[in-house]
Amino acid sequence: MTPRAPIVLDSDPGIDDAVALQYLLGTGLWDLKAYTSVGGNLPAEQTYLNARALARAMRIDTDVPVHRGAGRPLTRLPYRVAADFHGPAGLGDEKLPDSTAAHPAESSAQTLLRLSREYEGELTVCATGPLTNVAIALLEDPGFARRVKKFVFMGGAARVPGNITPVAEFNMWADPDAAELVLSSGIPFTMVDLDASHRWLFRPADLAALEAAGPGTALAARLLRVYMEAYRGSGGDGTCPLHDPLAVGVCADESFVTLAEGAVIVESAAELTRGQTVFVPSAAGRIYYPESPALTARARLTGRVALGAGPRDFTKDFVTTLQLWPTVG
Ligand SMILES: [Ca+2]
Image 1 (cartoon, rainbow, N blue to C red):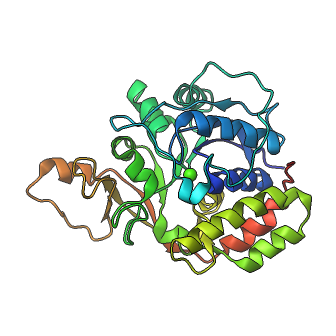
Image 2: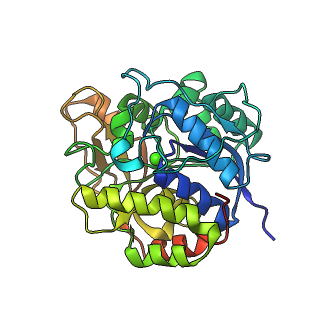
Image 3: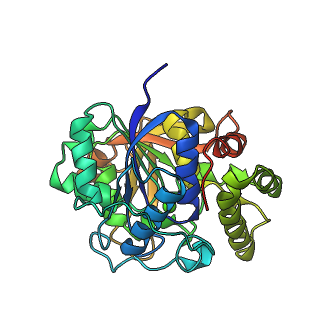
């Protein structure tokens, strides 16, 4: 049997973050070394409490430490509550009990740094919230970028509209300075953006399958029902995207998406286009900004960007895999 690979999930739970954690555990592929919370969908203290409660509900709180993220974005005002999509406390209508685990002194960013040293060249980092913690780790030690094996994040919109402004995806918008710092660090990144996540939808039939699967998926089904209603309320068709779970899926199998090589430059100066992710494809082989040596150099810091769905059915894998990790509550 292949040993399970070390991973950190850096997350701002949040409904889709919550089911992304259950999906990660269900795959059986990963050795989850830490669950590092970050502010985003909610203020940092609430995402930390939600992460602890989820760790308990998923029966990992005695094995996997949960860490507290930075109290605010790098330069912006504190995170606010995205209650429209995630409910007033971030997890729909749930009131999950807190874990009884001790509160670790180590912050999320410190944990990322420590694990990047302990598992140099092996560690996968999956981020499903704003990139504040990862940016702080890089500010503390730029070597973080070359020690991680792979950095996969949910965020951005390469060629499709945004979901918080016409051009910006929420995670990139919430801390654009952090995002630009991370994506210009040389870290080997894979961006799982709206271009891909809006292609793998969770449908009423999938919800029915989870509801029929018994108590182990009841929490996920209740959360996803709220999430689907939120999307319906904002003009959706009764389905919801699987943003954060897809990023976890891509950590193990890139065939869920179609990838292209290129730079992603995040707008962090202008307010109108704050958090816009400008995708500069490598394939074209041309220089897009000949009059700006800085942008020309920046465009050479490339990674992999999801531009659409891939051949393997992610929604199907998600629904099956959740059932392999029953939760309590
Ligand atoms: Ca998230």
